[in-house]
Image 1 (cartoon, helix red, strand yellow):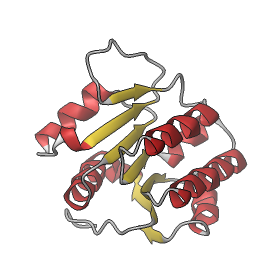
Image 2: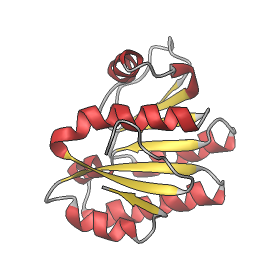
Image 3: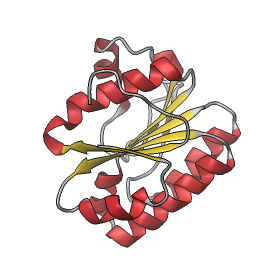
Length: 171
């Protein structure tokens, strides 16, 4: 993957080697921001404060991004572009929140960071079911998606299963 990725319409599963994960995520967001004007970034393990600093350093326009933060913290109300979810374990709440953001018409594309993180909180079959549900929501609302997964021995089985639902696979 070069610094300029081709983020296509539809649902893309992007598999990134664990060692390159942090640097490649900025590439993913930067490329997505150059193709779309309204982005929803769902983060399971990094708070907005850290992500926003990293994205700013990469020259990414934060005004284009609505964040769903699932780190379990609640906001102090000073960031209007952040929606909080109680926990990365709260899969139903995550789906409902993404659905509400889409219903409000605020996004063209969803970046989900990351499917592999879900494996810390639940079993692989639940991750696959959640992903299928998420992809169904995106397709029904004509919203593109970039579902990111760190490549590891644990994520191999879900990558194979999830690839059946996706429109594109990037490794």
